[in-house]
Length: 445
Image 1 (spheres, rainbow, N blue to C red):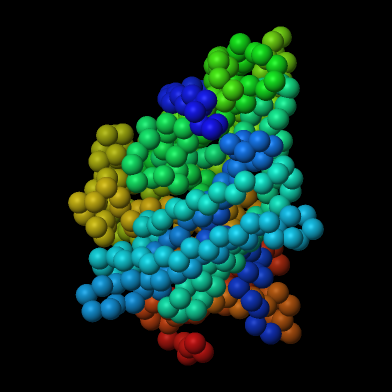
Image 2: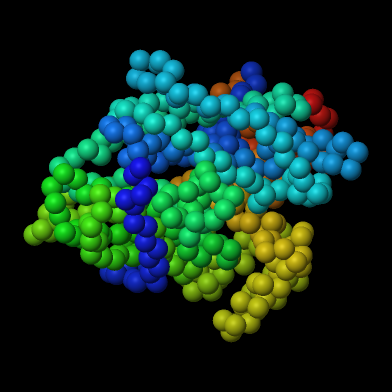
């Protein structure tokens, strides 16, 4: 078995700065908000050498949020019932792998049933020859018959090489020594839980973790050098390290950790390069990820912006107090108190409201940034942050005697609201129209 020859090592690095400058439209058709399914059902993959000769182990990951499922109360039990099916097809469209899982989820409260911070991560493996594949994911909610579909394009590399080779990079939510009850996430003597969303940062997750394997190849090599680089899409390289890896076994496993608490939020690329003698490049792999705000980054880089964002959910008195603070420790304590007062589940490790708020800020910036104006500052970004994903969007990019406009409908939870946004100046920035609170309108749903 391959795992018998896999030496797994945990490396932890503090991040070092290196040369840093620091008719009705369908939902999904609107400009800048193109894929609701991507938000509702995150999926990812990584590939490694299989125990079976000549085959590749394709690991497929998916993440299911409580808020995506429809829970029902049965006497004292609140539960949801869903089915996840996965189909793998080759380049000709032939079905070469399939899996179906039926699951029930039970929660203790209505709050937990609606939570975006309460989710489950699943992993399904297939052994396949090297090549290109399409993976189809289908999530069916059995209570309300709703369906969410996702697709992935997958390329499996051939690891049977003469020279040392890298596996794919697997972004990791949690990893460490092997634990009981986590068999689907076992690699050698490690438990490796994937990060399906590729999102890191925040006060609850101040480290970036990733896992990969190095295959020695048929040529005998005593050692290789592995370089790790983290680049910000906006500001260039923010981290770099280099280490020597002894190839004493056919497969050497690496799980690595970088402290990111003071990095600016945004999109990043993780690059791993394998080098041999005379600095010859042997192989390289890369992975895209996102870093969210953390309190340390807020205090270090852009306190003013962070306070302005909190104005969407805070009172005027709260915001005025935060703005007037000058001392770093006072600011840190005030931020802590701001979120502590709004924690829906005091006493638990996570503040669900805080996690959800910054998730929405991140998505608003990704989807609604226009002409160098950050997405959270736009009207659509503000409504998204305050109310979340719309239940229905009607998009009218071409309308008789009218500027392009969109209508966002919220009707599944709470009072019906409809927000109308108009592209008044044909610049792609849709402005909110009266009534600004979205109320007192007739619902069609």
